[in-house]
Image (tube, rainbow, N blue to C red):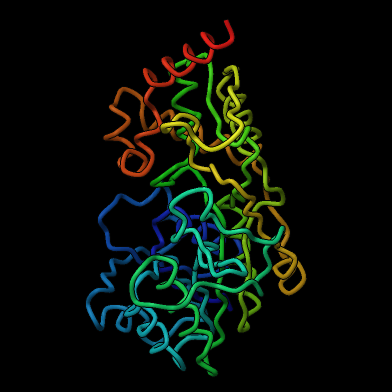
Length: 347
């Protein structure tokens, strides 16, 4: 008999990929989402789609009904979400909750959220295991809320919960694709690209296919645990830029700044003064996870999707998430002036 699965956030980047992966492996899948965006093409053929607004107190409980073999929550952000999930104890076989590698803190207690400059950036071991300390739980702040959710589900003895901590997730349906930093320059045929820290920053990416496979395995092998999710390699920003540019037939000159961004020049979505690399050994040993793809291959459909999403449109309207968080990284005039100043110094 097929296992049943409810995927919360089932039409989003990770949720949709998880729905497809579970369906491919014979699960009977229900994908729950708020219904505010159009589901990816073909998803309704692989899962039953339902609307779920979890801000309504009983909405999740009613959606679970008589229960599921596994509930996968890719959209748990509030403390109230944790309370809802714990309330499912005894009604579901197991739980898989998506957290984030942003919860990690270094030995001094520094984390991403507290870093206002290079000097504040945490200094993590390379690689970071699941036993690394985390930020303190709280009901405010992205990472503290995630830790609150993690502890709530893991502390419930009768709930078999797997917490998944992915790195920088990417894929074709990403609402905030970091790759646009290079894709836009390729489309504009910019002759050069600026990268802080000599392009050596390593901010571990996670292909959506790799995290979906990990979730699938966790659903088939329920237990109480925390698992990192990341690609098999952690490429440098320079390597990421070359992979994206190669996909789009672009070969810009690389201007590698020796230190942090200069007045915003050289800033990019992976810019970190110290490496952030995840250890996936625990996932490999405990549930037999193996990567289904690697960055150079997985980034191709991501780039192709970005080209299509922005074709004939203002990119700010097509990619509002990018415009909000990374919109200041495309000041070409400032880049031209900066390069001219460098050339004048050389001359």
